[in-house]
Length: 305
Length: 280
Image (cartoon, rainbow over all chains, first blue to last red):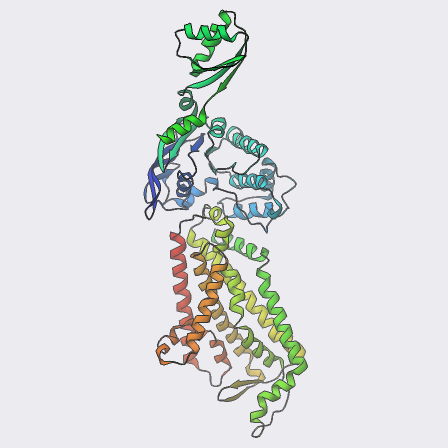
């Protein structure tokens, strides 16, 4: 469950490289228990923001507080409570998966046992491959090991920067399920950066969208997406009658286009049961209702504005 | 946390194939030198002693293990910096090139501690290289050629050092040679903090050594004031322990110059590493 305790507080973050403004004005809060989506197109400043949160980059100005305390004066304490993957999970190729975990675990601030390493390896689905050197690992396996590495010291906050980049569809599903397990089974707060809106929608409960180094919008995923108009495809036995019913009804639903056995409507999510009832009450058989949310359009509209 | 990180650095150096290039190269080169001296050593000795034979007679085992160790050290001490830089120049930039620096610097250890742990591991590797060279040169040389007095050829004459007077000279000689190599290791580590790839710092280190050596050997007055300040001028200070009488002030001066270089370069490395934005 998400609480109101703020785990991450970013206020008016700015990072300039000479004349180049990588981050202009980014602000957002992440609450305990959130799976927080950090969205933005490529080059919007997501990675720079994440790197400043992890003290990999010194910001030009702005305030970063994690676990309620300021980052730069409490760096080591804060970092001991964070597990992260920044961009891609890079490890020592000449060492085995197990040795890599031992190595990073050793400097994570807590005592790491062999049994803990094996438990984590099993959790991420790499059991049986722990003795293999990383030179033989696929990108998906490295991502799994990356997640294992984030969990090795049992951190409160997990930061994953584009964790599904370069993965095949099955790999994406596996990583998504792993993240959901982190939230549901281990009660972790997760900050998930991505440029894929549908990915965030499936996993996150809250999100922020940034573009050109500035925060555009932040809030609950369901609220932000529900406020938007949906496209709904309804498969019916009588398309002409359905169209008449929609036109005669004094609702805000409008017809997008009509096909042989279905109609597509613009409407809000709350109107779906009303339209369904309207059809049923007037003898129109409804075979299916499919929501086609125009997430990418929403996203593009926001960032283009 | 510092010692845990240092232990990690030892593991990484030990696991990297490139760490064994130095040990392999030294083994091969020492082997070749010892083999060549075993085959044609007497001719080599007579070539050295020829100018003195009218006024001196040489008795006993001149071609001995002590002489072999001295010859090997003279030959290899010029090349060992490359073998050291091959590993120490990769300590920071190699992590950047692999991308592991991102992960390392998100761990709860300060950047200064992390860099110093890398430095300590690099120094230990340098010591291993030097000890291996000493072991091969002195002990294998003595096994093959026996022991005896050491004959040191100088530009202005010949010095014969008694066999019983050599132990401490080799010990302190190795110690100062270690200081010279640590200076090289510190230089390559510092350059490593400015680079994002492994090759750059290694090549730059060698380029600096070559440039400084050329400046040091060019006998032109314009470089007279610079020459005593260059660390390369003092890298052969270990040879001073094989002179009689011992040039103490010269040795102390060399040790101070090398030490100042080490401290200065390490301070630059720490400063740079602490302010470095990790963009790789």
